[in-house]
Image 1 (cartoon, rainbow, N blue to C red):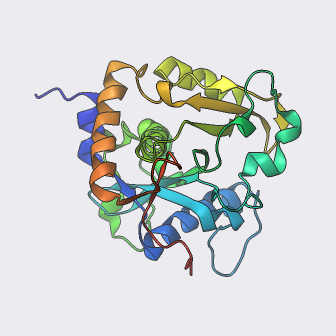
Image 2 (image 1 turned 135 degrees about the horizontal axis):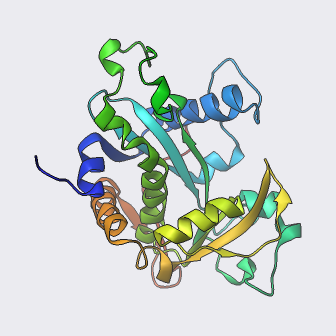
Length: 267
């Protein structure tokens, strides 16, 4: 039997998708609603059954598509504040700056638009089922019973969040960002470090949907320290993202790119 690497196996079942249309962005909002509103209760429910906030007007979204069924398993976004509008903040700037350790790293030293914040990572509960639940029938989006995933497919489920993180990092790399900020639990940061993503803690732990802190990843560490298998997966994801994204370059006076899509129409 052919032995596939983690990257090859993952790529067999999942594909990164850049949300360059209103319809794809709405798929991300629906996943977020299912996780953040229905499941966790962190955000209010609404009739549209989509979770959206003011940052989505300057955020770029990635989805992870399950190839066999076409179901979107999860999503992540990279928020890039417009350089010409200082009133449009990143979530950590609006909610967490009081915890910042500016002596470690001061994000205000970075040009606006040259960095972003990764947030709203969400994975559907159906792709987080434990092994003992694998025989419980369920249907997603009115898809027939063949939607129930095989044991081989389930072995890839724990890597979904990592695939989404790598998608967000690839997007930041394509935008020529100097770095990125993430609000996360310290224990998640320890796990990411083991995989080769050395986020640096730049804020005190605070109560922000649980005990979380600000972490920063410099561009020099976007992927060079990844484990060999995850570096292979990053290469696949980065190639897919490169083929999907059209970028706008603002010239030498503004050292970054942004994806060339219209974010004005969400609904």
